[in-house]
Image: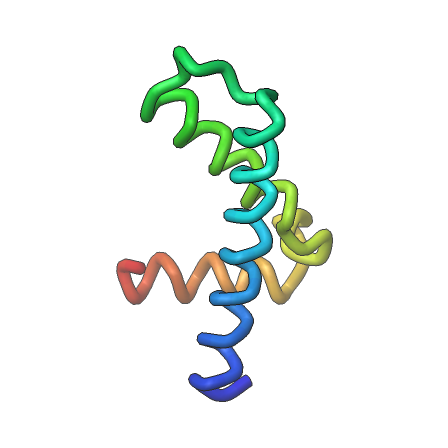
Length: 75
């Protein structure tokens, strides 16, 4: 995937999560007393739910390669 495709993927994923969160706020499902702490956790959970099942298995070679790259490049 080239840089342009990567950016498009990230933009679309973020837009999907953003719209889902906004819809929950508009429907009154998010309590008004939630501030940055709860909202950060909610966003984390929403992004976590959008993860790839391939990457959930830490024994998977692709996941090990990913973990190694993140560690060695200090991402």
